[in-house]
Image 1 (cartoon, one colour):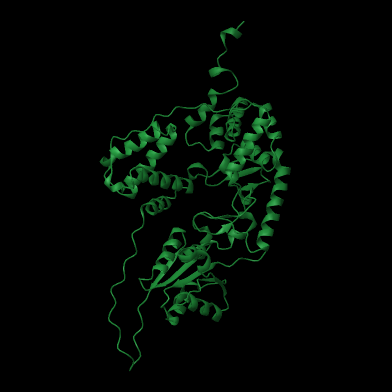
Image 2: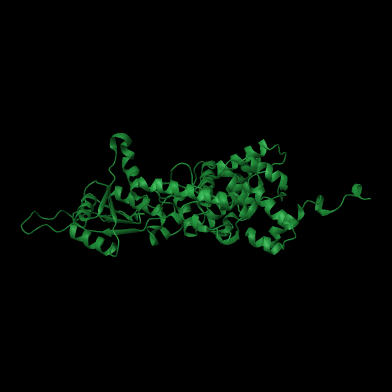
Length: 461
């Protein structure tokens, strides 16, 4: 399998013409073994010099040109988004004034691509030439990031999940729109309370949804805006009720599994047989399965924690079939120049070829390609959680169950059945990945022994 070389974006202002500076910069940054693919916007200046540099050193050039006829004024930003996607490095030769280069720099940073900015000045005119033009005004500083971009950046600095980032950004947006686009700096506890009251009274949201909105606004004021804690003092959280988990009996589990087609049946068998959460199943990679030791390593589970759990022997034959399908799909993607999966944190930069390796592929890949929301690169992600949830709902209905069972009910059933089998609760806590044993104790309340395990007086002799 051929290694896919990393991509470096070379771009900058149209007026840039210092080829020796470009060569010295790229020779320094690209030093080391292995070839690079030079990505160019094809718009002149630094872009064209980058192509010239690539031709001189035998590197491949990948050009992105704006489609003005199709996209009009949006062609430049669309081109910039496409260029930065999947790059391991972005190098900009900037005069401090070009708005197109400033947009590309902002998009590269937003996508998590390492950025190198080389500021330059126009060269002096040759002897005997015309006098130099009057000194230009000092370059304008980069525009201040927008509020929602600040929220996203604060989430990424703290390594929050992309789901938390999206949720927080959406709640901040809704909060601002609710108050007629007033900036949060001009608002305080009264406006936050009014928004949460609207959610509870008009929106009739659950307590957990209301608390999520409160957490997002608390994050906005304390972290993003750095406001004094007293500014939103007095805002209260909603009281949450504790819901009893829905547990399926073994016959019910079997009835539902028989109604599920593969690979959804295999996913649910892992949730019931290994105690995995829905997203933990979907995010499994080939390297996380140890078939010889019958073991699964869960990476970056809830709370960013890793753990190990068992791999049921009953699923081994069909898991081998699934892995062969993963290999087939991966090789087909590689044949058309794709096959690179998303890698967490900085692994894509530290291991530039790992994204195309078989061991990093998803165990349950999606049937279609999608656009990475951060990098803009088109790649094959794992199967969507919505498709699995819909398949389980249909199977529960087809099996004739009257319980309100979901995909998470398989995990609840895993814990409950292990308790029924007299396994130690600390062992079950470790398998489930619970931080506190009190969380695992809830399953002692739903054992198959009636309410709280007490025999009814009506059943007593």
